[in-house]
Structures are given as C-alpha cells and as structure tokens.
Image (cartoon, rainbow, N blue to C red):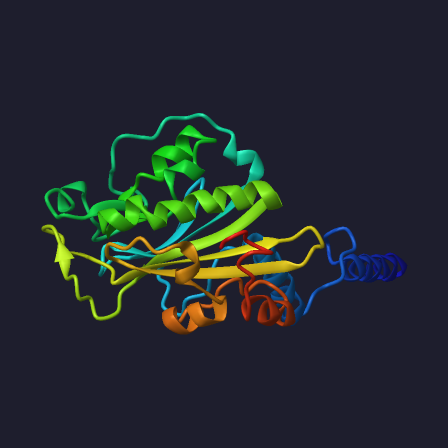
Length: 275
C-alpha cells in the first residue's frame, strides 16, 4: 500500500512537471490569437515595400530579380515589382537574347511567336538593364511573364528614359522600390498572336525612395501605349492618383500615416531631379 501511494505521488509529480514545461523546454502555451499575430508579423516582414495589394491577385510568382502577378486571361502581368539597390547597378552582363515562357506560370501564357509580326515590341516591365548583377536574374527578366506588347516609340523613347532615371535615382538614394505594369481599360488595341495576348492601353510605374533625412518620397507615371516624345514631367502624377486608376494599393506596408502623406504629393525637381 505504501509503495502504491509513493508510485501515485511520483506520477502526480511527473504530471505537474510536464504541465509546467509543456514538454518543450518551458515555453508558455500561446492562444490562437497570439499565434495568429506572430504569424502575421513574420509574414509582413517577408513582404517588401515594392509589393502592391490587388484584390484579385491569383498567381504571384517570385523570381530572383523581381516579383510579378500574372494574368492568365490577358497573357500579361498585372504588375511587376522589385527593389533596386545601388550595389546591383555595376554588373556588366550582356542582355539575354531569347524570350521564353515562364516555367512557373501554370496554365495559359504568351509565347514568343505571338509577338512576331505583331507590330509591337516585347516591352520589359522589369528591365534587363536592372538585372546585370546576376546571370539568373538577367535570363528571368526575359520571361514573357515580364513582357507586354508595347509601342516601339514608347519602348525605345520615354519608357526607356524612365528606366534610366530609375537607375540614376537608385544610385543617388542607395535603394529604390519599383512597381510597374500595364493598364487595360477599353482595350482599344485588341490582342496579338495565336494566344490573343492583350495589348495594354497604357503603362504605369510607381517609385518609392527614402531621402537623406529618412523621409519616404514617391512619384508615379502613366504612359499611353502609343508614340509620343513628351518629357517625363508630363506623365507624372501622385501615387494616390495612380491607385484610383488601377485599383491597386501601392506601398501598403508603410505605416498608414506615412503612406498617406508620402503618396499624396511629389516634387519633380527636389526629390527626382526631373524638369
């Protein structure tokens, strides 16, 4: 009887020890709410400032140099976003020479043959000029998921001017967050190719930087998908204005008050050196 009492006492003590330490070294048990909050914080830390929010995003793909949301109905991206650092601007890789389907896109997508004889350029969203720091990043920038049918005059003209400006500002500020993509409105240009790749009505690009005082600054641009030789200033707008046009929420991982102030104005000359 005495042995039985001692045995039961031992089991009770063992159970008490297990309860206190929960069998895993003493961590306090978390409520479901605490666990959810922790997961949210971890998730938010993984999302870069360049990634926009779009309610009907279905296919988001991450490549080495950029992230994109793919629209399998239109066969073009919804948006393409990347962070460009000053250290990435000194590579000397040559451009890749072959456009190819994106192996991470499941389902319908564009093929290079869709662009042949279409009268439109294969217009990069994340430009090859920003990917010279890595062979893989360069090759992936030539995936057709990063490309839209683009007017040649625009692609070789003011769109190219803005790409150069982005690199200049990344050198100046040390880092730039970039998001760009097509705007399909009335689809007045129709489609190209056997796979009916939608030709965008226009293109957008939004930029975010942190100036020398630590203040966030932003600017946005919209370019009609047609010939034109106006300067960059004529295409500029606030990020808030761009959000109304696209239905996207740009730079939403900024603090809400900071985001509202940052996206409601732009300074062409002081912040971006554009006349």
